[in-house]
Length: 139
Image (cartoon, rainbow, N blue to C red):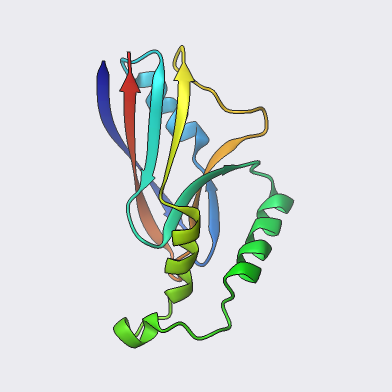
């Protein structure tokens, strides 16, 4: 059994930036000494998430619109009373999507569907650099 921890970083834009990280995750799995197993993708921070979707501009727009309907920007969030910042919506959105995702791989290839990509969704208000932890486990 092999367990390897790797890190990737991406620069995100403000307020619901969806970034395809499939290629970066795939490259790290290919460099791993494990040929088959699972990779857990985890974003550090409480205002971003990882998930899978078809990374396509119109679907990205649909996803952003759906997130806005579920957790609207134009309402008051009590979180501002605690820290004075305006990112309560960002924390709520990230809580719904979750910070981690596990993907199986075989022969160092991710076992994703044809139209399935791994994406980071950054919900925070300012642009930032995000650190993503990859835990590769296998044999």
